[in-house]
Structures are given as structure tokens and as C-alpha cells.
Length: 253
Image (cartoon, rainbow, N blue to C red):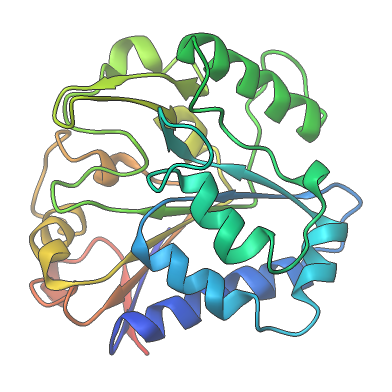
């Protein structure tokens, strides 16, 4: 099920994303932990600022959540390019979250392939599932690039060889860089995937990814279909989307 929510601007998208994370955490009363995956990009940084101002959010995260990352660059954790660093500075440290609930991808690892496998084991251990099962994240936050990539899944991704895995360690030719990333298998197992997209530079990609008439496996974001997939867009990002051709229900907020 795809839901598309359109907001006036980027600030409204960040606020809506923070509220969604907060509400899902507050509603989670199961004994098992709430599995949350964070993403990189500028919009999540704005979302962190909104989230940390909500009442008792630190208590909710510390007692109910386990925090993972959907992708990471091959950089150390103090790098300006690190998704973990952005989360640490914007959310984890300001809320004084317990270190044991935060599970980072080690972009500085000598072997990214070994790190990908280690992360798979860690996710399964936290989720308390077997060695062949796929963890079902309660909420995975994602972005989308102007080229239609999401997480670190780009058009040149080796889909055939990576989809047996939960975490891949691709070399992204389009970026000339090594990455760690959740695979499509992992993303599509999520209970809820939430895309955050703002800015006019995303409009062409949004049109292609969310148009029922456009068909292409070259846009990785189009291949993400979790049990519930929510798109939070600002007006600039949604500007070229035709409501009559959309692959989901549109709500203007």
C-alpha cells in the first residue's frame, strides 16, 4: 500500500516525519523492541531537530527502540559524510540515548563485505530470529536522489548477486565510492518504509517513481514496496506528479 502525502515545504515534511516516528513509537506496546532504521540526507537532519523536541521522546527511544542505519559510506564515524555522525550530532547525543540501542554500520571497516555480514548477524540477534529469517523493521526511513536511487542502491547495483543478502557492500560506479546498504530484500520486508523527499531537483525522479504509467527497474526507489510505503513530499518535489497517474493515494496536508 502506497500513500503519498504532500506538504507545503521542507520544514513541514521534517515535522510530519518526526511526528510519524514519534506516534509509531508511542503506539508500540509489544514486548519486542521497535526496530527503527535511519537514513542519510539533509531532510533527516531537519527531522532530528523536530523529533528531539517532542515530549518524552528520549524515554520512548531508550526503552522501546533499537536503532539501525539503512546505509553508510565507507568513511569513519567522525566524517562529515557519515550518516551515523549526522544522527549522533542531531539526535543521539542531544537525547542522551543509550549506546547499546544504537547499532551503526562500520564504514571504516577494512572489509566492507565482512562488515555487511556482521551487521546481518547483529540485526537477527536483536530481532531474535533465526539465521535464515529476514528481520521486519517497524519503520525504515529513506531518501531519494535526483537519479532515483535510495539508501545506497543505485541504477548500476548488482541486483542478482546482492538480493540473497540483507546488507550489501557495493562499489557505486556512479559515485566512485564504496558503500554499505540494506538490500531490496531487506527494505521490502519492513512493516513501514517512509520516503522523505524535498526540493525541485527531486521532481523528475518522483514523477517517474510514483507514476503508474512509467515502468523501469532502473530506478531503485521504484522497487521499494514494503507492507506500508509512505511518501512525504514537499510541493516542489511533487510538482510534476500527475494525481491521475499516481501509484498510490494522494493526500495534501
